[in-house]
Amino acid sequence: MSAGFDPHKIAIVIPLFNDAANIERAITSALQQKLPEGFDLEVIVVDDCSTDDGFEIATRLAGAHAHLTALRQDQNQGPSAARNTALAQSNAGWFTPLDSDDFIAPDRIMKLMNVARESNLDWVADNLLISREDTPTKVERTLWPEKPEGHVELSAAFFANRCFDVDTPRSELGFLKPVINRTRLSSGLQPYREDLRFGEDFELYTRTLLDGAKAWLVDPCGYYLVQRAGSASHSQNGRDHRRLAKISREMSRREGIHPEARKALQKHCAYSEKEAAMWSIIDGVRDKNPRLMLSAFGYSLPASIHVITQVTQTAIRKLSSK
Image (cartoon, rainbow, N blue to C red):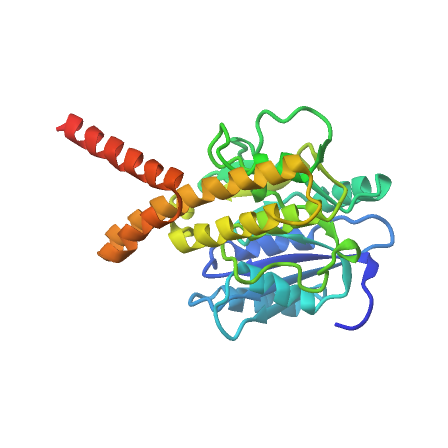
């Protein structure tokens, strides 16, 4: 889109893949958003070649709501490409991602936009509210349970360190869903790396922080992250972690990077290599592929030691339980 971004419009972008059970809830919550005075809203759903009737649901709703657009990819490309497709169709100066199985409180966007504009932020995120799919409105915890009250200014080093090996499982800050000012992004038209199907948010947020973005994490404003049983294992594989390790390594080698950010990204890379090695074992066993299993030992010495330790501990536990 050649036209400039409209600084008084915000786009809520929802990628969709085989989630007919939840998409209407996500869309409805997006359409119910209150906005600062003078702002316009658009909600864009991009279906990534679903085989259920989720796209038909989105299309039906789009026929009844002028602010809603439903698009469909020609081939399955993952959430990054779906979000980029949505944003390529929009001139909104601000955007925020919303997953199809999550939902947001009616005043969330207005709260975040007020903070962003009052403090001249490039992006602002809120501590997410974690719930379960059987009780989606019941908050189990926040994403970062130990977060200090008030806003936390984010740096690349701090953010990267909070995206791996955290105390509380699934509390990495890469899960955040910020409101982002597109006019301050170097890749505002299509900001997501399409070669990533996992960790695409981590890459985008880290990249913007390395570029000097001013970003805050504030207290909960009403994003409900609904955890589904088994969702983590179904969305990861060794290839995803290999790509993430490669990207962390590339970012750590950027010229002029702060030493603390470099150190954090090197640690993230090492962690991702360990995850890639373990998932190579898991994928290899599942697919009965010895070559894939052996590839687990080709990342690094620490990753190989990690695999040997984990496999040995698992074998000991199984023997002990007999």
